[in-house]
Length: 336
Image (cartoon, rainbow, N blue to C red; front, side, top):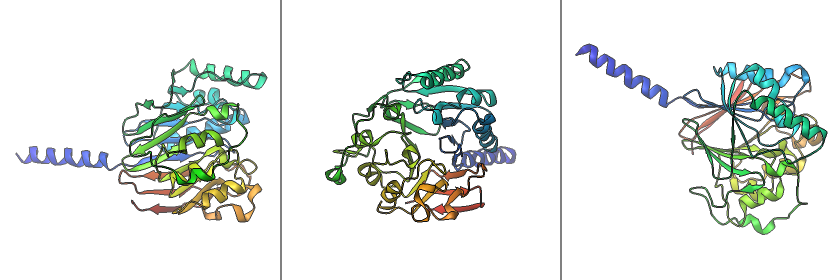
């Protein structure tokens, strides 16, 4: 009986330990592109975008290094938000460095020309080693322990609000449209991701007018704890009617030194009621000291190609922390 009791105690302890494991999110520095790696407590993985091509496998190597750090030997799902060099260009090199189970996309590239053809051909090389899943708004990805809802794809956004969302958005009265975007940016695959009470959103490079469709007249997404700032902080995105409605506690920007981090976007994020912090992958030259986060909240201060990442560790109760690899500092955010 003593051995049985001991066995049961160990089993319960193991179950509790597994249940208490956090979600890990690595914001990998791909110099102004995007590569964001999610690793669930069960060990399943989701990568959003693959960075650039070329550069002697720089981005693929950095993604593979983050995967090793997270004890991941295979990336189960890779979302290709859209067909631009800084998001899909790294696919052929990535699959040489680490196996991929399934690529997720919005369908074929709608852009034409030599650059678009090259990107499409490179993506097809990656697809030759993996499965392909083309998604539409409202679809979910079957990732154990993570609730991933597709909220935009191929120029269309979800028709109905997510559960718990749908409140009228008072910010819509001040909405100003921009020129219609006919590029791949407006077709970005956007994801609303939940881990217990922790919520985050990644809309790729979804642009201004499409962001408004998610926010007006009713907020279809609800609120988030962590905002992954769209389009590297470019002023072509981060429509205030959506950013303010999402009401993030923390924002992380995948910008480069000379790409993204527009002062107007920084002002929009700082104008969110209840925002606690903005974190950045790079100091953005465009903004100067006044329109950048404090140095302690920036992973890469100078353009020395250092490749430092930011890492979020999120718990099911909604609490989370952000770790800066450069200075080895962590800031924690309590559950609310």
